[in-house]
Length: 394
Image 1: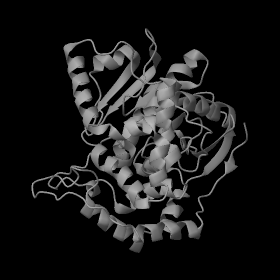
Image 2 (image 1 turned 135 degrees about the vertical axis):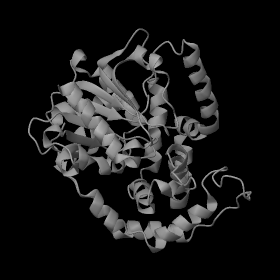
Image 3 (image 1 turned 180 degrees about the vertical axis):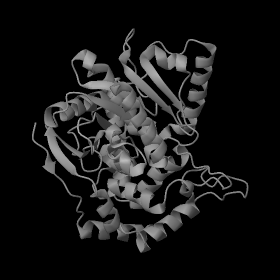
Image 4 (image 1 turned 90 degrees about the vertical axis):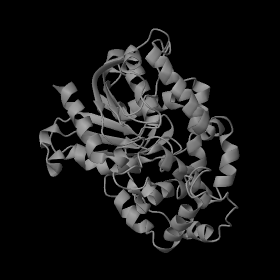
């Protein structure tokens, strides 16, 4: 365990030049023709859109501006159980605030939370009350971004152990609220299950925008079984990436290590599919939700760190841990909030199933937003999390 060391994002120019040249030199593969009434993303990432994005990438995208944005908040690295962890740490403007740890997933990064950090730590700058702010810690998952890679794949249960030690032993927070979606939901679920205040740990409450750690027993009612069947159909269509990353992640990394365009296509197909890309009065499109600069900044978080391959290890590590379901008869006892965003590609099960595994004290059905909730709807996300923090504090 080491004390936090200040960290600044400073990517060498030769790395940026190398990425740009590879994008410019990319030899485009043949792709199927798209019928006029067909979704251009039917076979994967829209070829025409990706070509235009790559033109923008090489001619207009400014990594140094993105780098300045990434350095806007204090960030650090620390050794936790021999693992190098990169994290943002921003204290609330008011003293005595509770602490929230925000955990991202794949194919995201800590950048997903940049739109909510100030809203959470300084709500008075956004029409709220300074007394309602929270301290925020945003770690990069092991193998992602500026965190070091583990020696071999680890899963979310092990990551939860690292987070608990980071928060309590490195940063000195006796208790904290865990928040997450995607892998962040799994990590946060294990924090609440194994590292809660009731288990002599530090997690005092849990806020989820996706169900990660599953209750034991499975669906029981007709409504729950219908949800399960819907999930099976969805996963049959959408889980090819997961199967590859859970079984042979290194084989995938050989191709992506030398292809910025390939890595971007693999990542951005998920941003299009998983986000709530509809907008009233507009054609469904990824840029209804994310700007090109936002999308490329997140992609570059994988490329400038060479972490596309090591990020996929978490899938293999999770398979080895068998960490997706609670033990029989077990339940998360800390207060739990559900933020149900309608565009979430892995929809929440009926409340009856969730409550068998979690102490649900708040359930919020949102009007808009999808899988990347904090990135897509920062105001809605931050307001719900602050309300929950007040609820469990009061």
